[in-house]
Image 1 (spheres, helix red, strand yellow):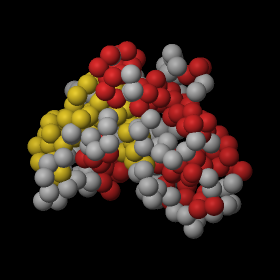
Image 2 (image 1 turned 90 degrees about the vertical axis):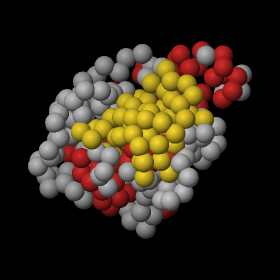
Image 3 (image 1 turned 90 degrees about the horizontal axis):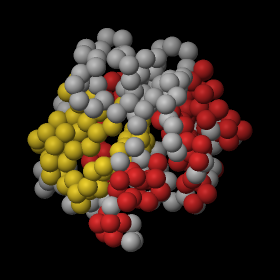
Length: 272
């Protein structure tokens, strides 16, 4: 990954986010109270599971602040993606709460959370394969009523290969390019927070590094990024905040650097 991003992400340029995102802005007609107490986005002490099934999460807490990259790591079956889906409203949170910029959104549907400013990129089935790259990006702007072309240009600047392939069917792209389309489509909503579920799954190490560099660049605009990642060591290297989950519970929490240096974390989750 490029070293240029490792130490300073203080750039206040918010060009790819909603105007005022992370600074108390809310969509027209929203009733949120800006600047509420606590982290910008938090899933607080979440316990829950799917439908009538058993609880998968047990008082699990994950959070991200404006301009941060927060990563969720842990062994297979630890509940990492489940925690992300709980924050996005895709399973029942039986106790605990989800708050975005001080507003309790626990009862909202995923669609309503998108309208509130949550951009979510699932691990699989995250593009329209028969549509062109540009049509996929246009689909990301389905809730917008303003001119979204400047945002599309910003996405093309972030992912230049997509500009080159904008007329090509997205299903014909490589795995890494598909992920760029998926992230780009989420950015077209001008989200207040970007959530990525294993964005580097199935891509080569070189492509993984490129994607991480772009994720860092996105965070530099002030946009909070919450990410589940299977490549734990690499994810912790770029993380401002990190959560290790085990069996749906918080096992370790700290900065990426702190967890990389923690002997127990290294021994249990990073191969020594």
